[in-house]
Structures are given as structure tokens and as C-alpha cells.
Length: 267
Image 1: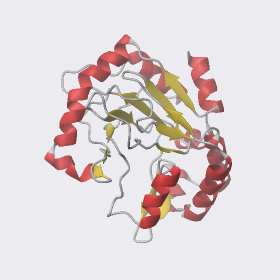
Image 2: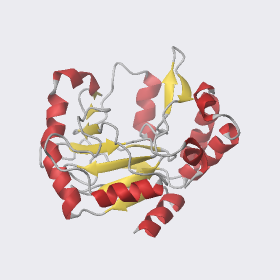
Image 3: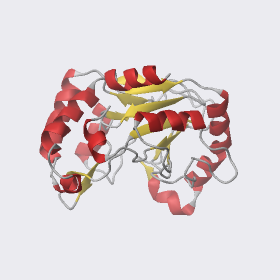
Image 4: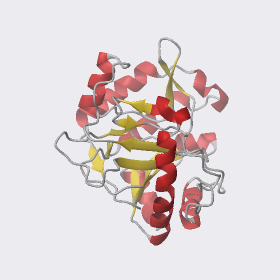
């Protein structure tokens, strides 16, 4: 499995994990916790696009191994594989994101600009995690060095119900750009660099010459995305019914396990 994992991450930019007993057990056990955090008063600010998306960043109250309360931890074999990929020991996980999509996503969000709404409609809000818009001018700076994006499906939902969209091979182009821009600079200075224009230019090129691919997850399935891949979120078609009345709920983990130099130029 490890060699296939490394090959997939290097070549296409993601690795898919089939459902197994341990992942399905984790998924089933944590669906109620995810639904509870979606309804919690302190998390109401995470509802977006006329309540068709609960963004839920760091909303899951999990421990360092991904367990909420007395529920099971993430499978040890999975955590070990991720640690080996990062050439690191297993470290604490971040607080999980609960990303829940509902029928007819995305509706127009009046709190977003016309350009932002259009970009979400036309290009699935394609982005690179870790480049955070700062200040009144929303300039992009590298403030978060996630090692990977682990997504685990908590619900059964139609394949066309807002799958994640990935741009194959974009991780290679993004990584080379980051190397050209940051290599030789002390990592503690990386976040000082304004990457806005170069990032937007390269992203535009990727969107122009690369077709996105939809990655659907059934309940208990998972994927690991390369930390440098351009990705976004597909739409929920207006005429697509939600047979299970649960929406599409995925739990995401994005810990920082790489050393800075391996984050920049490693596998």
C-alpha cells in the first residue's frame, strides 16, 4: 500500500482509500458528533451560501488521534501511513473540519463579492490550502503549512452531490513555483512574502489548461490530497434529491507534520 500511496501522491496528487471496517466504524460513530457541531450555537457563523454549506473549520472537538468523546480513534494503520509519508512520527491531529453540503449548493451569498460568487459558480472556488488572505487588501500569504488533506465521508449521498474537485498534476506546478519563490529563504520568513499575484496567475493557467476531476466518496471511504494540489468543491445540482436527508458531510484533517523544508520540496 505504501508504494501505491507514494506513487499516487507524486503523480496525480491524491490517493483514494476504500471503505474498510475501521474507517466505516469511525465514520458511523462520528456522524452524530458532526451533526451536533453543525447545530451548536457557537458554530452558526460557519453556515454559508444561504445555508447550503456548513464550512465548519476546526469545528470538531476531537482528540489528538481523531476521536470525539468515547468514539474510536482513526485507524492506527492510516495514521502510520500518513506519518511515514511525512517522514515524521505520528503527531497530534488538528481539530477536524466538518464540511456539509446541501441541495442546490451554491446559492448566491450576499456577504461575498460578485466576483467571488461567480468564481465559485464557474471554477468551484479552486484554491490552494494554506495561502490565507490577510489585511483589508486580502493579500495572500503562506501562514499554514498543512502536510496533507485527509477527507473521510460520514454520509451516503449521490455521487454528483458536491464532490471535491481536483486539478490533476497541479501539485507539481504549485510545488515548483513555491520552490522557485521560497527556497533559500528562512522558513520563518515565508509568511512575509506577498504571493498574491504569482499565485493568481499560476492558478489561472492551471484552470485554463487542466480539466478538473470529481472525487466522490461513499460513506466510510476517504482520500488523501497532496498539500500543494489545487482543489475546490463541486455543485449540488438543482434537480438532485437528497434521498438520505443528511446532506453530504465530510470530515477533514489538515495537520502540520512535515518539517518546513520537506513541506516545500518533499514528496
